[in-house]
Image (cartoon, rainbow, N blue to C red; front, side, top):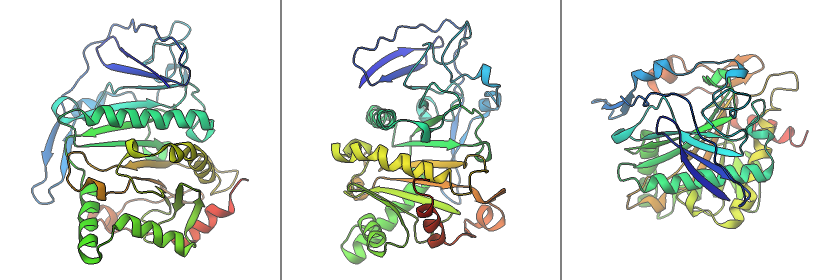
Length: 347
């Protein structure tokens, strides 16, 4: 992998990731850009202890532009975009409209391909491996920032999720705090260790691998399963079989197998509702251990993939119980979801 670091016209960092060591990246961003807005602040809810990012400047962010004005496509034919090069493999750059910036953290955009009409599931195994290298490299780089507590790599796909740019891309958030969901997992892991002497993440994976009924895909180094108490209609958790706290700790064997497992999983997601349905909207979220934490080795790196579509033409809305009380009601039994995801293998 070759990594080329440059800057955009307004001073934001942009990084090219290329599979070939001989790739040259020397295109210059010539747009007349003002310095990026960075007026976000973190406020804490006194009742729940949650952190809320207030970022009013994001109201002006780009919203559903036509394909020929996509800011994530390469700069071609006299049209300048966020990526100065005329083509690229994988690119990461600082978000122009960040939710977190400066002392409140950092937000980055990850473009998986220059093909505007593709999706992650369309990538080759080699390109998916390069994306994994980019996620890992950014985790390592951001971990070195003194204000960063946790790095979150994720992808939102589909207008139903709220995506405002159709180009295949994801994001990376570097939080200055441990997120509430992660903190809850850590508390549960500590309680489990105190009660049983065992690791919670190890026990969850071992239970699913032994039970088999909810396992969707099983490789030598990764296991994908629908969790016993899935919150979403179709939800899959992907774990390395050897527990590690974050992406940096994956060994070469796990890195090699990951693209095969993950691409097959995404392709099955697109087949859940049949060939006449539009692509399945989803969120793919990496859960990594917070940094500077004495118990971080107790955490188990994993990816959670889920869709808000519950059946053909119908979405799962977070209504009264979910939004008001954080009590999820799932219309699709996890065992039925796992069975469907096995049925659509390789079709």
